[in-house]
Image (cartoon, rainbow, N blue to C red; front, side, top):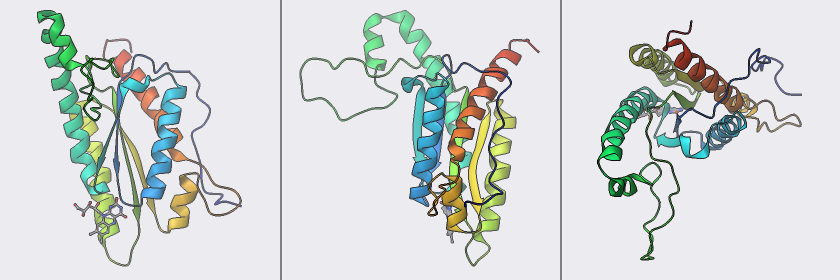
Length: 217
Ligand code: RBF
């Protein structure tokens, strides 16, 4: 039986549509088995709620301590990208082609025929960022310092920028606690994947804030 203290989101009172949203996930690479499961659960939920594959941008950083800076720069980069895209689109259709595939660049094609576009032209800033990390308590004070810095840092980024930043950081005392909160527990009951809650929270916050910022309060 998994840890009875594991909780998840309650049933939503409103279903929010993710189709118009653009969302970035930035994850740390420490504790990668747990991280991979959390990212998978997050992406699965985003897609279930209608967010398009091409509107989900995935980035990584070394550890959780780097998440606040990464979240801030992704928000700023998304705004720059969208303001750069608009004049190019008006200027010339040839320029449009140069913008295609800039979101998730892949290995250059060896064929002389241009590859079909794999991603949309990014014309809108990110509506939400999901910051994912997993901090495990060790025998020194690192855990406490990083947890404190990351939680305050992510909160500051969202309040300073007005773009919601979802706190997808597990802060666990043992590896088993983290595995069970990523839905990959070692016992019979695998636990619950909190990535799904973070995907749902991102869509809900992004949709509501987009509405509120138009004056619909
Ligand atoms: N990063 C994590 O995301 N999770 C951890 O559990 C974690 N533990 C760390 C423990 C120690 C002793 C150190 C030095 C770093 C740890 N980090 C961890 C990495 C940290 O978030 C950051 O990437 C590095 O400190 C570089 O800024």
